[in-house]
Length: 216
Image: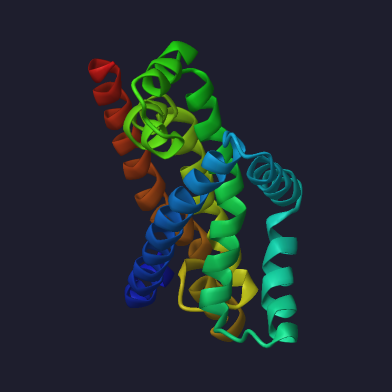
């Protein structure tokens, strides 16, 4: 365990960077996933087609393929960014497809009479979505959306192996390959710090689910 205590600064540095990646990607994937879900239920056929194509294409591709496509494909068309930006972008695009489907399950759980009543009083599709459908859909879809977000937190480890650097897995690779530290102790420490992200997130989601159940 001396490996962990002697390198606490690196572990905490990796923890802070991984936590930052998780928060950025969570916000980005929730926004993008909501937009794609809106396309999926849009009355405009081309938008529904775009939403469906996005979900079916991205959801059936491994995350590593999405990462490599963005990191090596975008520079070919003149878009150059750091691996950090490319990695976060790929994780947002990948997770948004799952957020969309989880949110759509919440939308489908809302009685159709509510949407019909909203249209009857003159609300547009956007107003209906914003004022009636999405607030209820988010409350209903907290468990599946929460599972997607926690899976995304764990998937963020791939960014370290991808070359982002400075995150938990990137620092683990540094400690084991460059400094020759004991891999077992290092990865036990990495697992502990990931649990410090995922367990509080799970407890927060349980709290939000209970609050949503009271509101319904």
